[in-house]
View 1 (cartoon, rainbow, N blue to C red):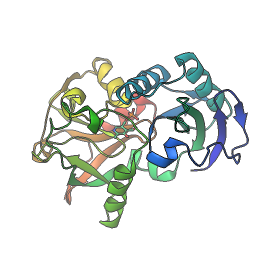
View 2: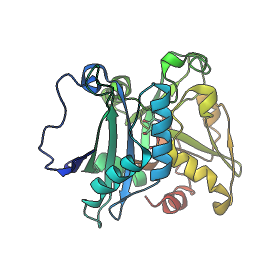
View 3: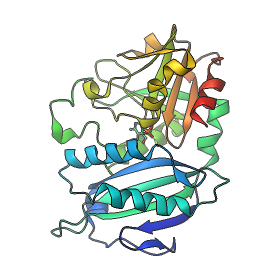
Length: 279
Ligand code: PLP
């Protein structure tokens, strides 16, 4: 991914090579901050309202004071507006807790090209291994310090999970709860088709991140002739699904063609889901 634009709150666009963080910013020192990754289409951030709402919710759960929504919206539009409108991009909207003691968030947005590793799986599909996340499915819900449902800057575990996947020769992992339920992937939401219904994992009940892309698809499921629902499922339960996909703003939609070494036939539904979502 090549960064093509950077915008800083209160400063507007800056040269992407400009250093914009102090060494003692808590975002760097502690991973203490929130972020959102959005899809940029025709130089505009897609589903911006939904991402801003999730960012506000993440920040509230971390007691992190954010600038007003209008300022963040303008920041996102400023950065996205600098992108080539004929090419899709990824926008990252970041707010750290700022420099210790100041109480002022550091906010900036970056726009980057999307790597082929995110684009190719939309047509080719991906392979995954299931690995434990170490919590029971309901293990985070009554423990707010575990930051369930929060998109914080502390993504080292997510990245380590994906490095582990590559080291095992697969494309990604599915995180499984210690009591055996499918949760999510390190950067995407799981959606599956059972009968005529598209399903995903309930976020509030499990502490997974509520995905904006999966929500958009399930909220419009009726337009595609499906019902929609939320349910807990085990990896074995996915075996009889008519399709299993990972969804995220940057990846779009990628079908799981192999889970723990067991191949799955290509779902005939994948092309229309991709078309509906615009990926
Ligand atoms: N789950 C996790 C842990 C993620 O990091 C992401 C991506 O940001 C998602 C799910 C998918 O969310 P969205 O569709 O909003 O990109």
